[in-house]
Image (cartoon, rainbow, N blue to C red; front, side):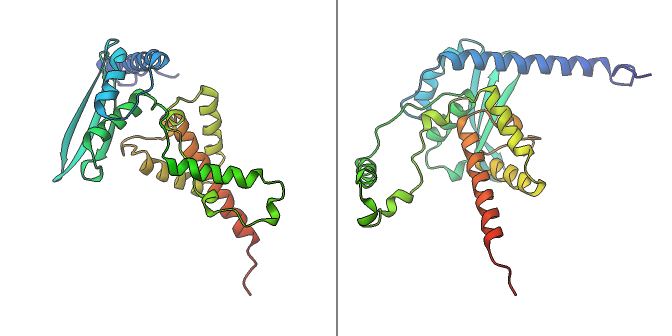
Length: 241
């Protein structure tokens, strides 16, 4: 006969703590969801601008701290978002790897709270490059003209406003399924790359609950595309004698 955890030797106070932790995490999630429904995009990721946009979250029991923590003689910038219920989420970055601590703290706080960045005007050079690409596409007999500029091969401009938008539950589930369908070696490589790129703490057991925004899905899509290209290149390469 199966015994309950209490009868299996788990102290009642431990069960109570687990229950409280689950309730605290749900309360934080609910507060963040309510805040993200009304949050306005920020004009910049400077800490002051992000804090101003985060005021509705503060009034619902959310607070944050930004501090420099000494780790064996090296400093880390640590930003913690806390809820009155007791739950918290954390983001960390090596202080000597960022140019502006306030800018970095603002970016990390925006990531944790889900605050989007407003669309900004692009440099004139970018607009000229786009116009050149459109001109090449618009010529009826483009094949007879000169080859398109190499600028067409450049990586697309990342829209940070869209990148910080939350994924729907259906999009998150679809992304999880794509990851689970990978071979074990590819899945491990993706997990490692994701952790390094988004600074996932080492004590996080999985990246599954970190896939919450469009930038996360875009990173995974790009990784999977590269895997497919490498597989095709390997299959097309002739066997050596």
